[in-house]
Length: 183
Length: 81
Image 1 (cartoon, rainbow over the protein chains, first blue to last red):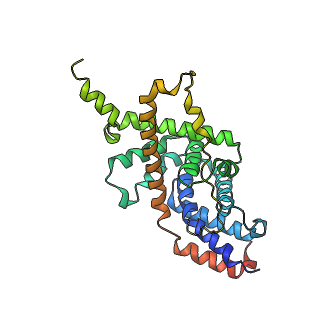
Image 2: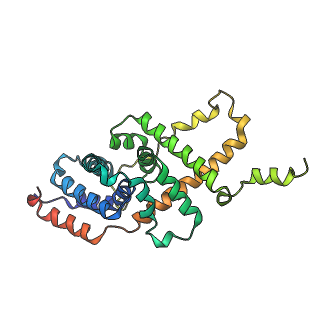
Image 3: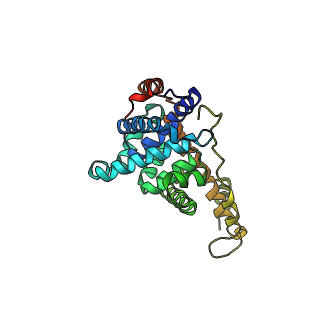
């Protein structure tokens, strides 16, 4: 069997985003690349079960997430500090360093429970609909919405506490501060 | 995503917006305008930062060994276990 070049291009086109998701799950670039590789092996071996015209990214993300989950169950001890290592991994991108704001954001993101971080990334960064994200995670749409909302609220709390100065007062706050000095 | 042709990523559902008309206590949103405003700015910033982090990896494209793997597998697919 030879793979349809159009399908192959769809697979390749999904790889960059798939890697970003894998890094957010595993907290480790090498492990992420292994996951992506294993995902592609599985996907191409079962390409017949992919229906042309349906959502290739969602299909590949689902395979990768399932692989990660089953691996996680097998090797729990190895990955249990994934949350902590996620922040470390992200520091290895030198082009983004030097911004206090960014580092604080990474640290805050790493503090989220993994199911909330996963939902937020799928919807807020990968660009999936709530419905697709729910299908990828094998849960209800409402569950994804609630995870995303909790993730956003928690991040806002963490960032408001840790970096008020970095976010800077908005105009309304500034106006209040400027006008309210005497009273 | 690089190949946009048959990729059906729908925009995130926008059904959330309605819930903002009233807060959890049932008060109209106008009573907490400042709060909502700040919330939106923070949320927008969170969205930007999140995408920036993610896109940093996305911009690395397809690593050579993965591109090679996919090409190899798609030419001789029978060998895949």
